[in-house]
Each structure stands twice: as C-alpha cells, then as structure tokens.
Image (cartoon, rainbow, N blue to C red; front, side, top):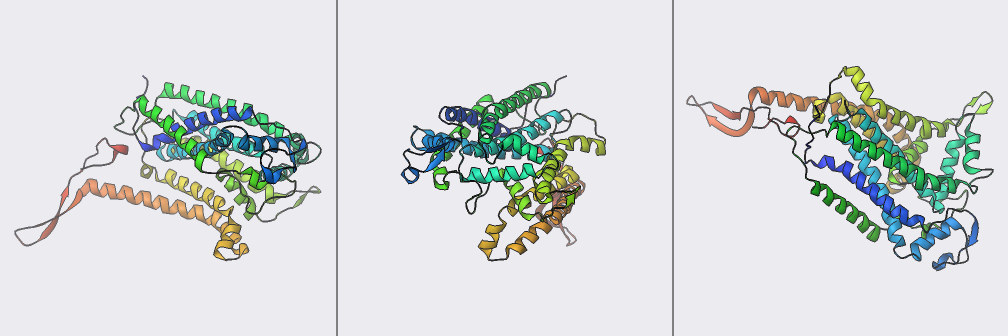
Length: 439
C-alpha cells in the first residue's frame, strides 16, 4: 500500500520548494549570461563603457563581465539576480536539511532522499565557487589563491593536482575554462538529475507529514514560484552584489582588504584563519596541516558524518520501521542536541571568518579573538549539546506532568473549608501538529 500522499500546509515545507524555484531562476539567468560571457584569460586592453578602467589591461573574461554589466540590456539585472539566486538556493537547501534532520524525515524509507539533498548542498556550494571565479576580478583572484593553496597542501599528489588545474603557472590560462564548463554544463546537469530523482522518490514514497496533515493545493505551489522569482528579481534590481568594476581586474598575489567569500563558504575561511600554523615534515616532505586539516579534513569529515547519519541512527537505535509521520524535535532529545551541536560548530567557524573585523570593531586583540574561536569550536558544541538535550527532556517532562495532572487554567477556587485550589483541565493526545496535547 502506498503511503499517505497528503502533507501538512506548514511553513517548514516551503524551504524545499524555494530551493527548486531558485534553481529554475539560476538556469534561466545562467543561460542568458552564457550568450555574452567569454571564458578566456587572454589579456586585452579594455575599451568598454566603464571609463575608470578604460585602457587598463584586463582579461577577456573580465572585459565580457563588464560588458554584461554596462552594455548588455538587462545584463546587470541578470548577473545580480543570478548571484542572489545562488545565495538563496544554498540557504533554502540548508534550511530544508535542518527541517529534515530535526523532524526525522531522513528515516526509512527516505534515506536516499536525504543523500540527494546533501548532494545538492555540496554541488550548490561548488557551483557558487566555480561561478565566483568566472569574472576574473580581484575576489576571483583571492579565491584562486585559496584553491591553489588547498590543492598544494594535499600530500604526495598536491603538486600534480595543481598542475592539472592551473597548468605550468598560476593562475595560468586554463583554470577559468575548466571552471566555466563545470559551472554551466556539468554541475547543473547533475543537480537537475538529482531533482528528478527526488521527484521520483517523492511519488514512490509519498510526503512525510505531521499528524493531521492536509493537502496543499497545486496553486499554492505555483504562487510560491512566482513569489520566489519576483523576490529574486527585486533583489537583483535594488540590492547591489559583486560589483566587479569596483574590485578591478584580477592581479595574482593581490587581494582587497576585507575580502570574504559568499556566506556559505565562510566556515572554510574561518577554519583556515583559526588553525594553528602546523607544518610537520613527514618522509622528508613538509605537510601543511594548517591548510589541509581545516580545508579538506574537517569539511570532508563533517559532510561524511552528515550523509551517514541516517545509517548511524538506525544502527544505534535499532529502528528498522518505516516512518511517514514526523517527530517534534523534543521527542528525539539526543538527535536534536546533536543538531544543535553541529549548528554551533558551523556557526562558530562561520563567525571566525570575521575575526579581523571583530577585533577592529570592538578594539580587541586579534590574537585574543583567534584563541577565543579556537577554544569555542571545541567547547561550544559540547555545551550546546548538553543544554539542548536538557531543554528537550524538560519539555517532555512538562508534557508528562500535564498529562498526569492537567493543564493549569489560572482559575482559583475556594473550598467550603477555606482552602484554595487551582482549576486544571484534563488533556488528551489529539492529532495536531506533531501530536501536541491540547485541552
């Protein structure tokens, strides 16, 4: 028998739809931009409409990006809407994964659906990084320097991998064409296939739902699509983002002050900033642990554990049942506490990417701020885990107390003997959101 097809008209279900609709906006705007962008690092003298850079040597990639911004009708709108759609897409995928994690939507039979969304997150981040390289501006130069350092830190094969990407010299002339084809062909096709697979799994297993789920009419989903597209267009119109003409063309070994990556890559920047400068010599070769651990080991381990979590929970809880009804976070205290610990770990690394800005703003030592984050990324998740677990247990205990003694109404009655008692109302488990007891 196929599972229930209805689902709850609940705000937490909107994140997945917003991710899909943002991806559609990315496809439309990306197709437009490909007609005018030139992925070529050959140097030319800029003769376009932006006067401050007139007669400055730039790459064809940078010149075509300026042409899109100033000379193509609607080009700047498309560039900015495309960039905003990337940020919203990754944010929506992250929020959707959090909703799935805290409600247990990854349990059987939806383990593969969980992996699809993990894959979409990783691919969305990769698409953002590769797309950010294409304008060949100063921010692109900083990102390329970071990518070069990360690849060179890989033991034994780092130099070879760097040669495959950059050629004989960095930044070389082949890295932008490689990232271009990854960005416009390979990554979008894989992501589209994952969305198709997700849709097939959804038709096969049905929606997960809260108790008392109601059907959402298709028109509501269509309205959300138009709203998402309209908001991204509005952001592209009034909210400036990535003004490459202000950054200037890429210059190897040079980066602007205060340059930071897009928000979803902030954790990587923060991890590198607070990692101690460890560089031991192994077998006569130096190993740059100060880059290898924060840039490859920590993210790799984090996403591996995240992808494997459904199997790990099933193994430890020995729960092999099929689950179509979602949990409330308090009903799975350990899982919720682990989620809070993971969010704390990610958030602290993300905040550490601004350690210099924090030190400057609050007039404190950069050394002290860095050490604070070094300690916090270890102690913070542990503290968040324990506090969240105790909070969930307390909420469950409060519910059990209400079930046993009733809900306090605030009404006080005086007995004939002169005593005072508060009136309570008996509660029963009723099919509400998450099975919340209601009077």
